[in-house]
Image (cartoon, rainbow, N blue to C red; front, side):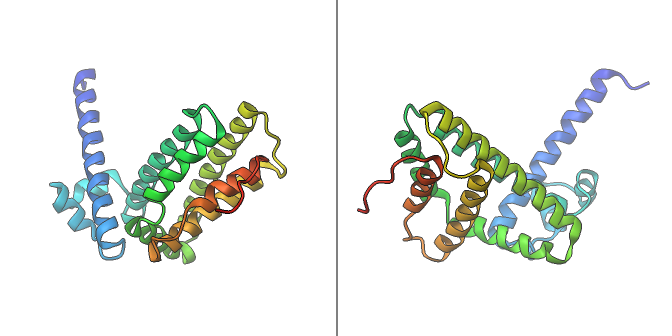
Length: 205
């Protein structure tokens, strides 16, 4: 019978292997793209056999979904932190502008998102997985918007779900445009947040 301590060590080792594979795949997917990155190379760069990849993931699609999940979680923490850590709406929006200016339009991230989304076009299961993740992001945005309105006594002029959908779509589109033209301002993002939470929009600069 396997001892609990042995099972724990085995579980920890597998978790470490999985994290290392995801970290390596993230670097390669972002640098070289999804199609150009093979599982053999991921395994080699991570210091494992290809069998280790298949012990943790069903294939390259699942591995890329995990990579995107990690990236999206980092983005979510940054955006939520900007709003929850601010003492005023303007402070939150300034923090959002700083984050958006630094991250929206990252050419490697934008290219990976676009390439993987295009891949899902003829793969219903993959498309469903991406739709599920997009819904989770919209739900998070809706929660942040609702909490922000409650905290600052604001009334949204449109349903919160519609506002979340609009902001996610704007963020994706702005990211793709800034990947081509990094000089594009991110100010529109915070201005639209003001609109959807019913806050005054500053006069054009």
